[in-house]
Image 1: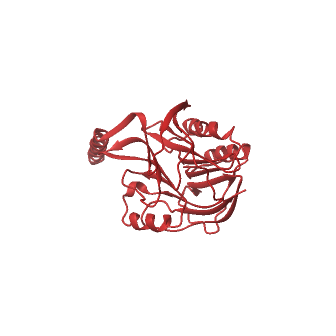
Image 2: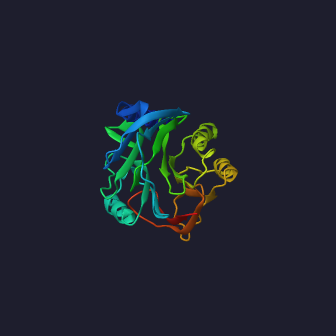
Image 3: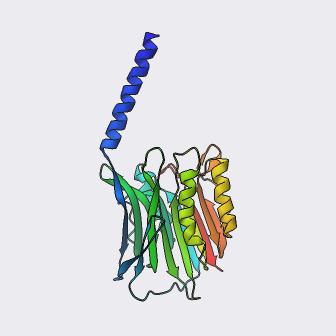
Length: 283
């Protein structure tokens, strides 16, 4: 019995020391870090704070998307901790028009894209982590923000971008990384409602893509009910290699006003998630 108590005491001490080390090197930002890098000389000005989402819009005229055919990659890159992510990211993005990353850092960069939107809520040992979206053109407006994890208080973040189309409407592109460490769905629902505040009045095509952490029936039902309410459909993958937890896929792509030409996922060893690839046309 004394051995058991000693073992538990040592385990508790190691847990305390590990937690102390983690939080000593952790910085949670008071204000969400949002950085838009673009090769074009386009100015943006703040225009709205919506449900804890900070938004900027272009200060001037914005070219419209002329193409209606696109390729998109979605991938949780595990903060670049696994060997080979650089090669896989370069390969996957070679033919892509949009690349949406979760658990991205300031070190995931793609020089072949003119625009990158990075949204982060914290840094660990000076390494920022969040969602990053690469595009071939600049958005007319963009937003970023998050909701704190109930247990660890580190916010999970998302970004929203709008691209004007020749038809007069716009493409809404949302990159999500949803709440994970919560057994209930209160904070999870809050984050979803935050994002759907942009969806409810949008008239054009929509793509919502990312790591949904929908690892139980309640979470998945909430996601599906909201998607159904606003007319979005889950993309069906011809080859489904998505990572699963408790039997549930974590990564999804939902669309509205979009014709999916092809969609699949593939196995990689350069992250703890497998990338999703979709080719689509605007309807």
